[in-house]
Amino acid sequence: MDAARTLESYTIEDIYALPDGVRAELIDGKIYYMAAPTRTHQKISMALSRIIGNYIDSKGGDCEIYAAPFAVFLNNDDKNYFEPDISVICDISKLDEKGCHGAPDWIIEIVSPGNQAMDYFRKLFQYQAAGVREYWIVDPTKDLVMVYRFEKEEMEQYSFGEDVPVGIYEGFIIKLTT
Image 1: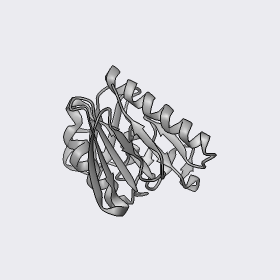
Image 2: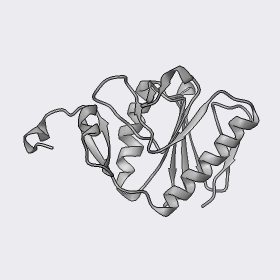
Image 3: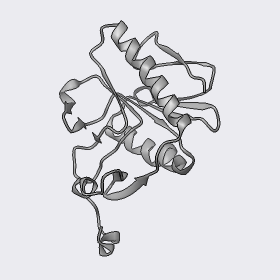
């Protein structure tokens, strides 16, 4: 990308123009590059995806689950492009071959050492403002799960090994371990 553009605002087209293998998110026109996930990160992501997918299937649910890399065009503009670790979308009219257009119902981000501020602050605000119903921040270095149920204006903290109730599915509980 052109060095002269560092003070300018980027668009989704700039994300698409990145070289193959380079992953980044775009928040309010600013590009944030993403490091490759760790083995622990991937282990947690796969376990959660399996648990959630199995639950949805067992209930005959209409929601769909996607693991990163999966594009979420959160605000339906050209200045924001997210790749949440896990996205659960219950309104399938938001989905097309490029990704999800609008807020998923449930987003899970798994914290990596280099992205703590992004997950705990920047994305938290963006997801809440866009209408995400539930947001989990899974922090394997602290063995914590922060659960934000935006519709109820609730925030709860759980340790790994505790039962974590899923707000968008009554009666669904996940126990996360590493």
